[in-house]
Image (cartoon, rainbow, N blue to C red; front, side, top):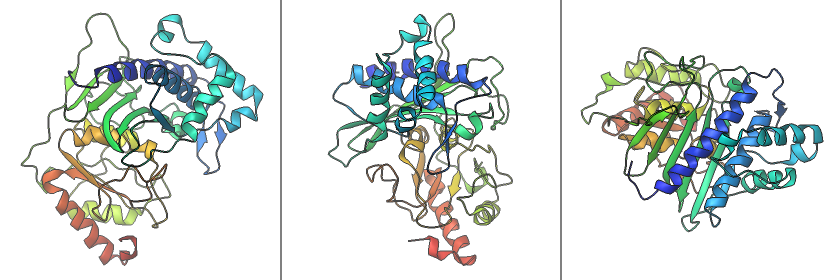
Length: 361
């Protein structure tokens, strides 16, 4: 794919390939060094190592850029055995894997790289270039040896311009439905990527012999109707959503089932971006609940580049400049552009009917 971001794309893909090797080395380990964070979500040694690798690699190539990521190194500094395990993952990369990226030179530099993201802020429209990382989205399923994703996004002035998502468990060309238990029978996995204005593509995650084949995702039909909607959702698996509203919205739209039931938000955006579904709706239980930038930035571009529209449930565009949390928005409504307004109106109708209008602005 020719684009003004060819160098950024090449470096990000190489870093994601090396990151996938780290994740796969941990995936089969019963002890993944899991730590519970203050928000009760888990983090593993793979999360820490991958965030350090991504930051060190991209900073080396683009030293003036800034970074935002999910993790900080506080738990590592407080736990030397855990720190040594994370460092061991980086130095354990084979030479052919390590040449794709730039590695930290010491455990302390590794922690510095992690914290460069962990304390980073996306900034406003004048913030310049900011990379956003989710080293492992779907940590809960990762520890179960199920689906997860490695998310890399580049923002310019708070606007998504590049997305690279590594999906080690998902095939390039799924032959049927995919879910948290899907395993690529070839063992290759896939990378979904997009550049603003240049479309969405998918390729094998692991390079094999011969030329790497890229597949461009076909745009959504401009004649899509409500009858064409296919959902990706995650009901009765998270405590943050209003499941009875979600199910009523599906029923009102005539959507027969939940479709790809992914826990990780990045994988939901990948599912939409690859055309395996074309609608998702998420209403949080209260207005104080918000998304986190690393779960959505970049990955949303995959769907937008094939003709999808994404807003919150109030109809506002998603504001990636608000901070590490998407405090300017509540929930998500994603659908083909030509039916998005109809889906959004259905969300409003159902919430009013269920006495939940307080969840709207």
